[in-house]
Length: 160
Image (tube, rainbow, N blue to C red; front, side, top):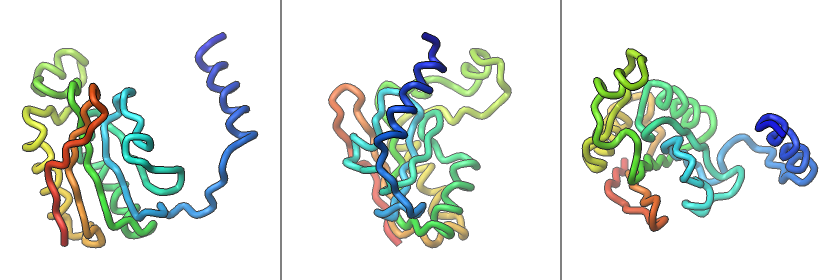
């Protein structure tokens, strides 16, 4: 069976038993920006359920222009007032440079590598707090998830 066939078969089972959440607004007024790493089960790690939070994932869980676009909509259109930026240990963006990643991928992009999680989180939270259009955000936290223990380090907190 191909991967696509496995996905479609799993979807048939899901569709037959799924919970229906009618409201597109996250019930906990929360958005989580985190890494695309397959070891992070965001809902389980944070005790969330379907319909409670927006989850925005990208390499490294960094605040990029696309994250800003999503958060502008989340906050103004869908009522989000709290954001968690959650990076993780053993990230593929930790300890490498943009130049190394450009050479490895052949892509002329900025990859937002992470030298130190606390510094990267401070940088990302500063971006969020200085965008006038994100004024509806009242609380922003910076977490680091440990992929070995499952524990979260609460490193940074900002409140309006």
